[in-house]
Image (cartoon, rainbow, N blue to C red; front, side, top):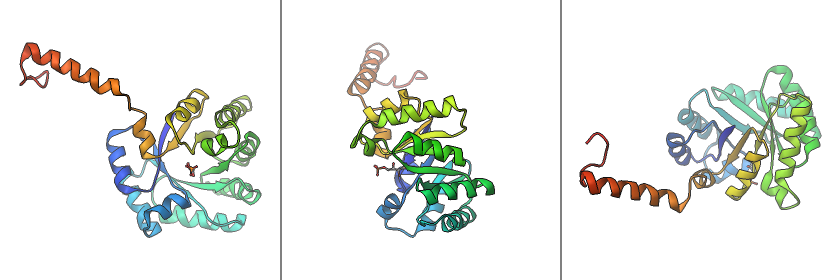
Length: 224
Ligand code: E4P
């Protein structure tokens, strides 16, 4: 199961990438705009941090299928390494996913709210679908949508991965992990929050204190 950073902040990405088992970076127009920087140099900087092997997800802006395809070609020619094009699940988006599949350009179907839209996107050739868990939770049950999508893909042997997106708390991350999502993409804050529990630091401190009582305060490593 993948852990992907949903951010375009280079400092945050660099920091997380050093410590966490990160599989890639997703962006969308809002995330890019937040950084207030020139688009392609920013993406190239992110690529430098994560290396050529990790997936970098870039969302198109165009509405018409033919324009989406042109944008996708431009992006994949402009950024090196493993690039996945995010395409909204509009009717034009589905046409674009079909055309891009035929060209060998990988896609993620985004703005997914229903299991059937995910099914259509997967049939069209999307490599990923991204159900918007928190946005769905505001209307219904995001975890259930993720669970139904993973069931549909499994029952019908569709080679498409569910990269669950849009989270506001770690409970949602846990729920979709248990529901069988193939990956989560979330903010740097929530990735860090997956490790947060007051007992962890307390326990570690206790172990160190007991060790120091016998071996002395200088014994801060097993090698001392
Ligand atoms: C990622 O692919 C989505 O664009 C993103 O997670 C949406 O998240 P939000 O609902 O927090 O904006």
